[in-house]
Amino acid sequence: MATVKLKLPKIENGNKVIAYICLKDLSLKPQLQGIIPNRTNKTGKPYAYPWLTIMLTKPYVPSYVIWGVIALLLCLSGLFSGLNLGILSLDKMDLKIMINTGTPRERAHARKIRPIRRNGNLLLCSLVFSNVLVNSTLTLLLDTLTDGVTAVVVSTLAIVIMGEIIPQAVCCRHGLAIAGYTIVITRFFMIITFPMAIVTSKVLDWVLGEEIGAGFTRERLKELLRVLSFLDLCNVQKWEFLW
Image (cartoon, rainbow, N blue to C red; front, side, top):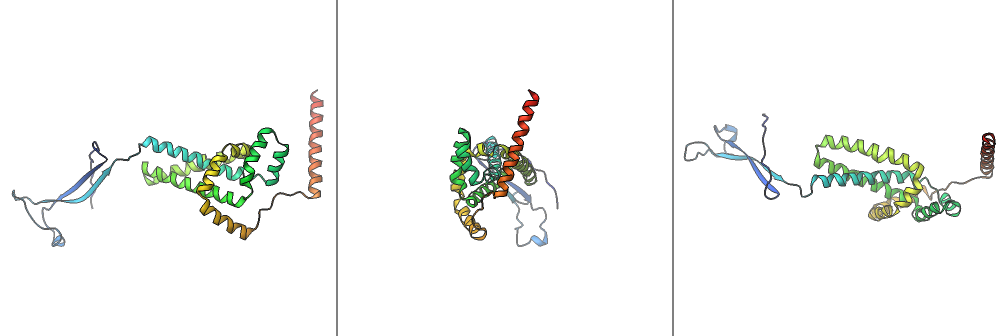
């Protein structure tokens, strides 16, 4: 066993350079007999034979382009993670109420989201498959720029912070607007992941049944009206006090 430090040649012309590590057969060991011939050249010195061949290739894509793609994939990872919480938290009844009683912008966003929200399991599978696809590609690209351990650590921290925590915190408050503005991206990845997502969603529909929307019983509606009336009364008394 030995440790050897090498300085490999630079790739100047073309995209490929072959380097060889050669060994000189100074004394042929018994265990190598029959594998390496014991020959000498004209000077009487033993021949040098290539022991290891190293092929150096130059990447066709510059590193700054790869970093740009990584940043884009990280944004997509955050988008899918946020939409998974933002869109699926909106019930079909909520979207219908927003279409009828919301502001003009909320109505526009709700109309865009409602068609893809009808099949909740298909949307869920598409978002999850897209998120996994993006995260796996991001880790592979990081591995081409760094070593394996660094790629795993950096990708894990980036996905957890930039792809999970921050997007979900934002989409909890602005999920409708983000989903409405990015509906084209969502539809595009639903088409890409459709072969896998449709099978999984059908299995979920068969096992779990249709999605049950949020409903209000008579008692719940009474309590809701009571709470809203109390809040309105508090606001009126607050303004009267300030006045």
